[in-house]
Image (cartoon, rainbow, N blue to C red; front, side):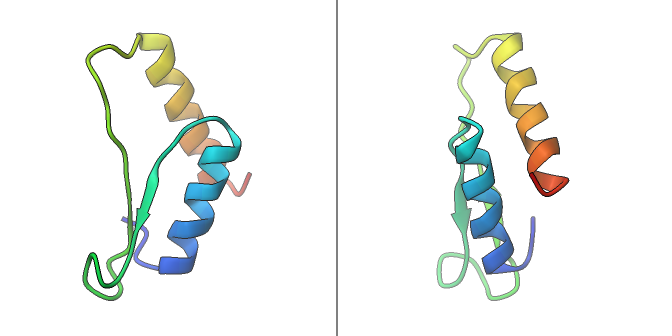
Length: 64
C-alpha cells in the first residue's frame, strides 16, 4: 500500500515503462489515504516472469 494517490499513479507508470502492468487504485475505489497498487498474477507465469516483476517493483520503489 502506497497511501498517496499521486505516488501510486507514478509507481504504476514506472512499472508500465518497465513492461509490467499494474493498476493504481485510489479514492473513491479505496478510502482516502489508502491508495495502493494492484497486481494480477497467473499460474501461467514462470519463475523468470515473477523475478522480472519483482525486480521492476524494486526499481520503481527506488525511483526508476
